Image (cartoon, rainbow, N blue to C red; front, side, top):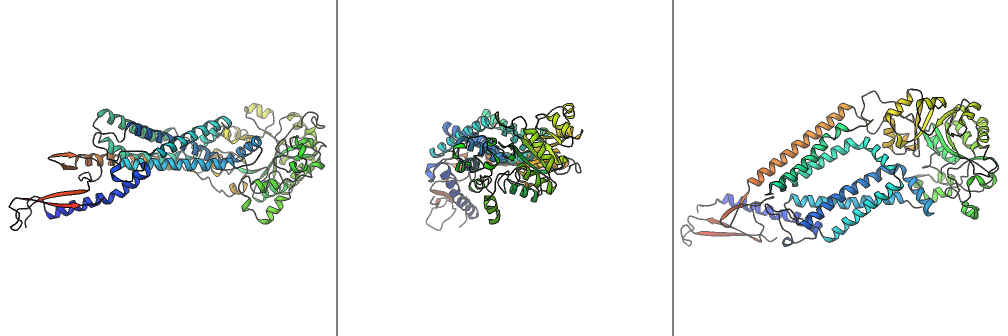
Length: 593
C-alpha cells in the first residue's frame, strides 16, 4: 500500500517526538507544582508568541523574588564574612540581655535557610521560563518572599546601626573573594541567557526587546569590566610574598581553654604562638591580675560567691577575694566557640579548676617560653588606693619577672615617663599617627584593629622599622589577607588553626589572574552568543499546522500540540477495496496526560 502524503518512516518520527513531549510533561508538572502548586496540566498555560511570560501581578512577584534574592544574598554574605567577630557579638548580647545564647550562629542558620529557599524559588522560575511556561507563584511562596525580604532588610539595618564596622570587614573580604565572585556572576549570566533569549525572540514589541536586551547586555558588560577596578594584595608577582605574620594569642588560646587563665596561655605556647596578649587590672590591695571586663560576672562564678557584688568593678576586690572565684566553669557551660566537645577529658577537668591568675603568673609563663607579652592596663576607678600609682606598681612586677625587651608596652598614659624609666620596653601604640609623631614617641610597633588594614600604610611604617600588629584575626581568609598585606604579626583567638597555615589560601600572580579573567569572559561570551543564535534559529524554524494556516508556537517541541489526543492524517493512494481512491484515513495517536 503506497503512501501518497506521508511516509510511514516520518509517521514514526512524529510519534516518537510526540512521546518525547509527553514524557517531558512530568518535569514541567514538577516545576509548576513546586512553584505555583499547579500539579495538573490544565492548571497551567504556555506563553503564546508576543505575550508576556506572566500577568502584571506575577511580574511584580517575580521582580520581588529577584530583589529578595539579592538582598538575602548580601546579608548572608555579610554575616558569613563576619564570623571572625561572632564572639564579640554574642558577648555584646550577653552584656545587654544578661544570659548567654549563640545568637550569631542562629542568625547565620536562619539567613542561610531563607536564602536557600529563595534561591530554589528563583531556580524554579527560571526553569519554567526556559520551558516557555507562564509564571504563577502560589500565595504561600509570596508570603515567604515577604518574610525573607523583611528579615534581610531588618537584620541588615539593625546590624549596620549596632555594628557598622563589619561593613569594613565585608569590603576587606572582597579583596580575597572578588575574583571568584566575578567568575560566579558571569557564569550566572550565561545560565540566565537561556530563558532571556527564549522570551526575547518571542516578543512582538521592539520596545520590550530593546529594554530586555539592553538591560542584560549592560549588566553583562559591567561584569566583564569589573576586574579592571579590582584590587587585592593577594594578587602579586611570584617571589614578592613576605614571611607569615607571627601569632599572638588573644587572652591565650580562648578556643582551647578559658580566656586569661594560666591554662589558656600554656595552650597558646603549645600551639606555636610567638606572643601572649592579655589585660591587666590592679586589685584593691595592689596586686596586678588578669581580667578583660570591668566586672567579674562574665568569666567567673561571682554570682555564687559574692551575689551582692556582681556589678562591682573588678579592681574593688582584694586578691584574697579574687582567689575564691572559679574562672573556668563558665567556659565549659557556655562553650563560647563551640570547641568544648573537642577537648579531652583531662583538658575539661583542668579547665574546670582554673582561677584568676596574677600578672606574675602570666609573666612567668612568658619568661619560661621566651614569648613576647602584650597587655593593656586598666586604670582603677577614683577612690581606689592605686588609682594614681597603678603604672609604677605594674612596672615593678614587670621588672622583677621578665626581660623588658619581651614586653610590648601598650598603655599610652605617662608613656614618656615609662620610656625614661625603662627604655628597653617595646613602646606600642594603639592609634595611627604620622611617622614623625611615632618616632618622637619611640614607637616601635602599632597595634591596630584589622579593619584598618592597608598594604600601603603597613609598607610605609615598615620603611622606618615600625612593625604592625593586627587584632583580632581568627579566620583563615583574614589571616591570608594580613599576610599578603605585609603585617608583621596578628593577635588571634584561633592560634591552633592559623599556626597550621603554611601559605596564603588565596594567592595568584597577575598573569594567572588575567588568564582567569579573560578566559571566563571569552567562554561566557561564546556560550551566550551560541544560546541566542540557537533560540533565533529555533523560533524561526519550527512551524506546526493549526487548522488551515501555518503558525508558530515557541518553546521546546513546539511543532506538536499537547491535547489529550493527537490526530495524524495520512492519504493513501489505495487501501485494498474498502476506501475509495484518494480517501483520507485518520490514524489517531492517543496519549493520556
